[in-house]
Image 1 (cartoon, rainbow, N blue to C red):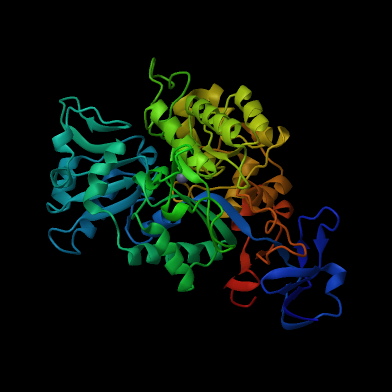
Image 2: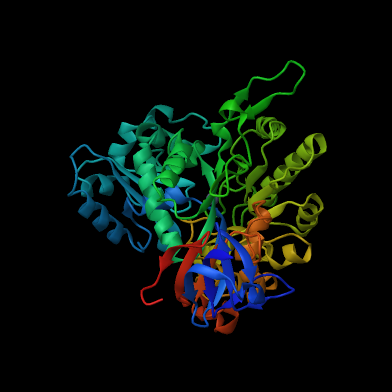
Length: 544
Ligand SMILES: [Zn+2]
C-alpha cells in the first residue's frame, strides 16, 4: 500500500497502553493507518526521519481565546509593564502614531504586577495628547479609560445607576477612575465594536502561527460572537474564512456566547429553545472547525474580586463577589439553550457560582438527558471537597488553568486566603474522582504554551516560588496526558484524536525530549522541533 507519510526512527508515544512507544507511524488522508511493526513494507510519498526524537499526540488547549490573543499581537502590548511610569511611556510613544482623534487601544495590563496600582485618568489624558485611551486588563474582566475615553462613551450618562453584573469604579470623591468592571465594559465596546471580519481573521492568522510553533494542533475557543468577549456578531464567519484561506493552522472548536443565541421558533407543543440561525448547535462542523458548547459566564474573576464565593473574600468581611446576571434569568436562558441541543460550558470561578452551575447542569440532564459533547465548567478557582464529588457524580469536567498558578497564584491566594487555595485549580483530586483532566491556558489571560502548562501542572509553584495546592500536583505522565488525551475527552473528540493509533487523526508534535526525562523546571524550554496536523507540517524547525 502507498501512504502519504511515514514517520520513522522516532520515540513515538502513542497513548495506547498495549503499545505505549513505537518507532514508526504511517499516515494516509490525514489519519494514522499503521503504527510500529505494521508500518513495515508500506511505501510512502514522503518519509520523515525523527532522529530518535520524541513524538507525542499534538497538544490540545481546551480553553483559550484565539481572536483576543491575536488582537494582543496587533494592539499595544502592556503585558510586561511593572510600573505606572512604564505604562505612561508606552502609551505616550503610541500616541505619536495615528490620527489625533483615533483611539489608542492597549491590552494585557496586569494590575497584580503593579500591586494593584491603577493608572491615573488625568495623566493618561496628558500622555495621550488628549486622544481616547482604552486599556484592557489581562483578566478580561475589567478595563480602563482615560478622561477623553469616558467622554466618548455612555459611561458618564450611567453614573449613579445600578449596572446589572458590572460596576463603574469611583474614587473617594465619587469621580469615575476610568475603571469599568464586567458588564460596564459594554460602554466602550458599544463604541468600538464590532471589529471588521478581516481584522478578526488577521488575529486568527497571527495567533495560530504561534500555536503551531508551540506544538498545538487543537484549540477550543471559549466564547465568540457576543457578550463582553466577542469581537463581532458574525465572528464565526471569520473562522470559516481563515480556514478557507489556509491561515487557521489548527483544529478549532468554537463556543458561541449565550448572548449570541436567540429564540428559535418552536412547534406549539415544544418547550422554548435558544439557538443560532437554522438551529445549528454543538457538534455542527467537521474535524477542522466545529461548534462547541455554548459559553455562559455565571461570575467573574478572583483577581478582580468579581467571582462569587460562598464565604467572603479574604480581608473583606461580608463581601462575596457577584453573579453576572440574575440567577433565575440565567437558569432559564441556559435551560432553553440546553433544550435546543447545546452542551454547556459554564464559567464558574467562585464556589457559589459553581453551586449554581452544577444545579443548572443537573436540571438540564434530568429534563433532557446528557449530550454527546460533554457539559463542562470553566476555571474552578475554588472547588470545595463536596463539589469534587458532585462534579464526578454528574460526569462534568472542571476545566482548570495550571498556568494561572505561576502567573498570579499569589494574587489568587491573597483574594481567597491560604485555606481555600488548596481547593483551587485542582487536578489530582479530579483524576482521583474519575474525571478527565484537560490542559487549558485561557490565553491571553495567562501564557499559553502547552509545555509551560505541563510544567505548571507538575510544579504548582507561584510567581513568588511558593507551593500552591501541592496535593493537586500531577506526574509528568498525567500532565502530558491532560494536554493530549484529556483535552480530547473533555471536548468530546476522543474518538478521533488524542492518541497516535490507527484510525486517529495524524496530529503530532515532535520534541527534543519527553517532559518526563528532563528536570521539571526545564520542561517549558524543551525545543518544539515540528508540529503536524493531519500529517501536514504546520511548523518545522530549520534543520529538522
Ligand atoms: Zn476564558
